[in-house]
Length: 377
Image (cartoon, rainbow, N blue to C red; front, side, top):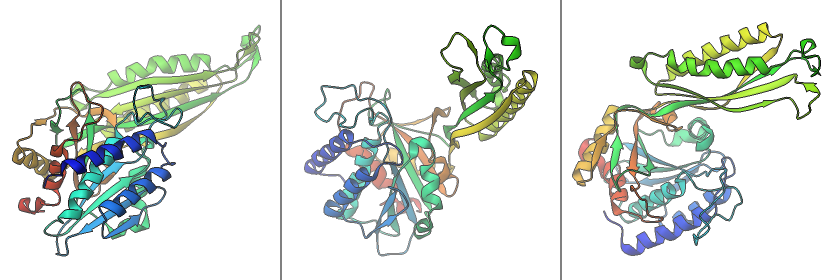
């Protein structure tokens, strides 16, 4: 089913509002209220299910027994200043911007609601999940663990992510790891301060931090290429005070670890812990670790990938099998870990337009879920 030009124009208006009113993770309340109000007025579902925080699901029943197919989008934006000052729909929230495309994802999902309101699936039901907190890696787990999620329990789950730099409308997908496992770790060292004229009387974290930074490169090199890729990036350090007379007592180092395999992340973390403990003992320091963010690898199930590819073929849309996992993290891995599911990339154009909604996007979603019974859903 295709949407009308009037409906597509309305979706652009909706996307502009979302872009102008971004909210950070765990603060997406106005976004959720706006989306709910649009759906209630223009694409009313059979019911809404609250899933904690700003998260909710809109359920569209067919009235006939069948599978439950869940489609997910994300509500949150990033702590990034909007620099496109010539946009009519520039962010009105200082230092917050929809720079990851979630406003477009939400608009796409509302478009699916428009289509379902006009024609329901033949069997089963479709659940549109509007998920908060994706950028922190906690949103999907929060929704899945909420008691109300027992009302949903999907048989299949799908999500997309826009991909700037790829041809418009191209579908990119693969079985196995599609998006990387990512950990954001901080290591804190505490020692003893002294006057900088007598550094030998201090227990400074300076050398421990420096050596751990150099060790980070070796961590990735120690992973055999046939095991998967590994990447460790020091992203932040903090130590002491800006005073010429003080040898510091405290310092910290933040690292981002990435791999297409959760086991490699665990292996690297174990090595970092061991190295930090050795350095702390060597330089007379106490140390502690904290995981600030954690994304499991998003692993696509083969059956779900076949459905996406069949949809692309039916629509005569380009389907490109990717060979490697994308290096960004995505918390949709929590969903594909509990049911048949897959995430795919949607080409946003090699020179992306600022706001264009393609009917292919909606057809792709609708074909694989609302009318997917022809593939045995």
